Image 1 (spheres, rainbow, N blue to C red):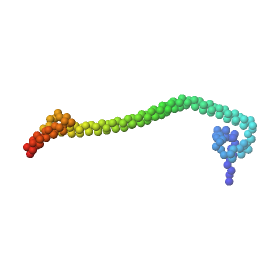
Image 2 (image 1 turned 180 degrees about the vertical axis):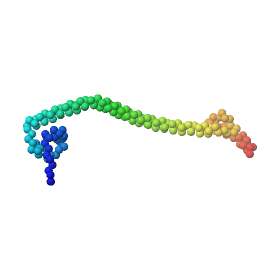
Image 3 (image 1 turned 90 degrees about the vertical axis):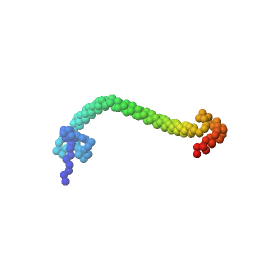
Image 4 (image 1 turned 120 degrees about the horizontal axis):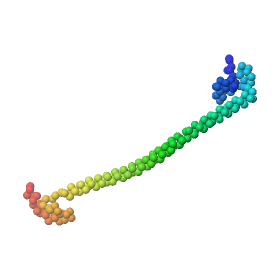
Length: 160
């Protein structure tokens, strides 16, 4: 069985393929299998200096990108806060309007019942009794009927 080729850090850097954290430890070594000279302390320091420089450039790019996005994020946050506040206000107004509508419906139903009752009373009050004057007040109606009853009775009997 063939063992996997061990790759040196220097080889990876020369190929621009270094992804140090994704390689398993068994694939990393100070030397390659091609019997090249081992990495010296100076080579490692140069690599570290390049890494530091690359990290510094990436940090600056990242910081610059963050600064570019700070203002749009602030604007979006302000818009979301404004929309949430407006939405909460609308919910409160909706609750108030619903309560007001229920009160108005109850008042409408009460007034409708009173109007219907008033119409019924009006119809009851408009019943005409033959022989009794229309201008007689309801309190006087009983006395008026007693005094006029013999006359009304006589007129009613004659009709049949």
